[in-house]
Image (cartoon, rainbow over all chains, first blue to last red; front, side, top):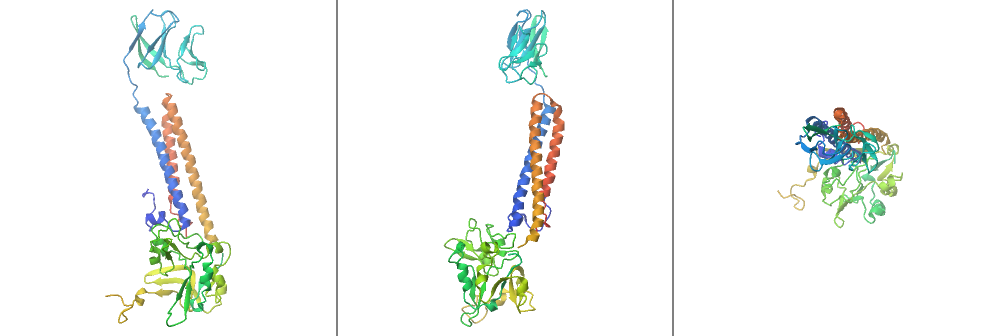
Length: 168
Length: 198
Length: 80
């Protein structure tokens, strides 16, 4: 902080350890103000780091995973699989004769596993009654703040492949 | 006290040592007087002088203290050493041009006059000034001291060092500072007991 | 003993206390801003990141200016 200190004839140690009690209260306040400014700099650097992450983040690409065969599951039936890593559980739903959708099974509220309710035609989370639409994963009701991430499927003949996670 | 100043007039001192005894009564240093009482030339004269701390504006003792134990407050009083900080190194004893601070080896602390801070902060006179019968130590308003023949001064010169104090010394009219050069008092010559080795 | 001087000192001290209070307020705002920015970014909305960084920078500059004011050796009001 020597740049910010205006030139004075007294050496720094004499100002900081002053024999005059009237000056001592300024020393502690100065030190406190400097500490707070340092903390403020830390917060600003944190914001810059978030900015850098936003600019330079690369969406990682994962190898496609074979989910199953077309016709393997009945209409309005489900199949559980994992994509992109074995720890990420997903659910495949055959919504129509030739229509398949897949979503991540992690509820966006508190990560409980959602299940497909054929009767209500929606994805339901048993923990806090959060419901998601089968069409696009949007929240129909309940505490989940964000829609369910959709898994993009690729149809290769009779094979269904999971190729990506759609960012909401 | 607001408006009151301390005046020291050694020519009025009669050597009764009431100030010494009164100072000893203070509870903070009971039994030890903080008044510097001198017999000027014991063998040659009965003259005596009593001094208190001069409470300099830029206290040399405080500047010399390595532990920042001596503080000067907003009201201009140089406090005695802070007990938790004083290490008894005697820097202040050597530094003070008036020879006021005293080291007490049994406590390893320095103690000195603090203008009876427990009294002056509640509008009372210091003990020594209260009891001095000849008012060699006086704590009065400047108007009252103007009646005396001697005039107060608070500027001292010790060689090249100029010291401005809060306590005033009564000096003959026409003298504006008290100048002392230690070299003038260095004995040279035939008196072997006092001469410095060459 | 020196009441006339101490009022000037007191005014200087009040100004410094006020400056420190402003610094604390700015800091709290910055802390909240960082938390909120991180939360929205991790939720996927990266739109708020740039204005948040700008405002955080302004907050830091404000803190810096105030701390320079506090650290200024104000000889006038600190005469002893």
